Image 1: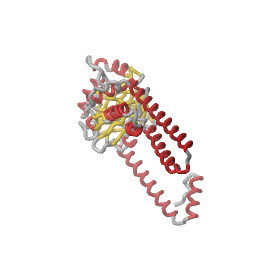
Image 2: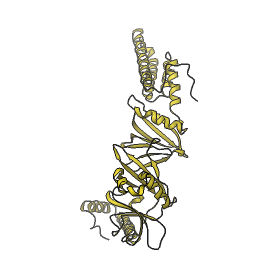
Image 3: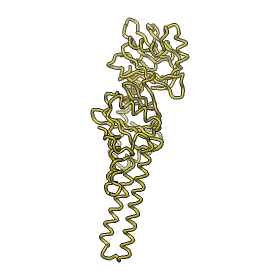
Image 4: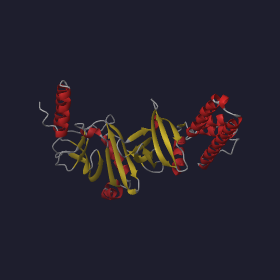
Length: 383
């Protein structure tokens, strides 16, 4: 097999490796054979399993010209129907009934459909998002990425007017999907809300639903069953934002969502309480703040308390530096005169004062958050 089919630059690099180490040629050829064979098998499989069209199928429900955002970005129809002679309902994304479907799911049972939900679209009140996750589609197309469709709820409600019979569009879809074999969650309303958040550098929206927490919509979309959330932790709290970390059962997997606006705290905290989730942060922080208040004359105790407070590690770091300076001072004590010793003691006293001032500022910052009360010493410790 020749390497001539490779791009010129890559071909030169491969040839340089082979010239320097001739046995590498056999390895390169084995890799090319393996990758080429896998690609051919995949293409053959995809071409074979998908029907050339949906013509002749019994169509149960079809919604045309939807804005599909995943697993591909196209204007497509979503079609639910049965192939001739079958009673089992399929789901297809296709340009038309006469064209080859872009995506086909033939198993709509709960064994294959993982989750389906209709969500609000931030900043677009009339729009909704349909999200469907599943295990497998016909031909394993698009890495089995979830279906994500954005639609104009007002326009579709108008089109479906006679069929809705005084119920809203999502309620109608819930009824239809249930007959197809899976449930559709209504992810909006009084019990649902969303907040802006980041997952690493990825900006998105964190949805809080009665039984799920969802982060989307850039891949990968994260879906958490609320019964699998072991605890929640608030960290990196500032005057403007805070972070939320979800710890999941059974392996204590952690997912941190950052830069959440402080105005959203009350809603999230109420959600946590309503689900009786463990809040592993606020109790420790409250205890830490009491230690800070009750040990203002003891720099060592202040530093230990600061370790329990988000951002306190910076202060602890300064305390560690002080200890190193103390050791240096003791080791050099024999060679220091009384004047230099007094200067160092004054510097240490000034550093302790700086530490105290920083901790006082930290207290004031947390008092400003509103949900931590430093002034009520008689308040019982939360359980």
